[in-house]
Image 1: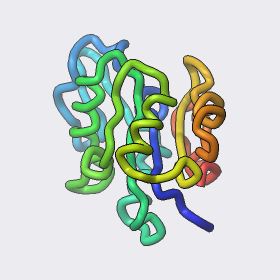
Image 2: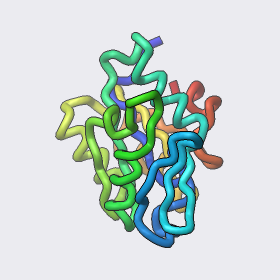
Image 3: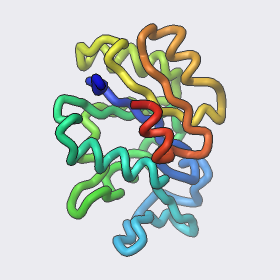
Length: 167
């Protein structure tokens, strides 16, 4: 099995919930015991498959040559970046430590992918993309405009099954 050179994750409702625009205030505190983040009266949780994916990428030999990126069109980029810096996937290892390219802008995913390709030099046919597709079929759009990208829908948030199927 050939592993992707670039693994790209959407954020809201793919890696975590709720969506950033739904929060009452900025994410502020990580709860180690529950691996959650407090944002005012809200609690942000990572989906179990997202934790599995980041642990695998960080620890398994087959991913040693893979680069991780995020591509999000959230309207709250500061909130999303704060979550990347707070969520822990292994003791002392934050999601943001694993992510090497961040594309957070309220624009199309195809635009994000064009910039990721330019920044990394990795061709589309060596990229894997996970997206919930709850606001539109980003997977189909990326597959159409960026031929070769393998796109995996995660309509219930990233599950272990979605992670394995995408690979």
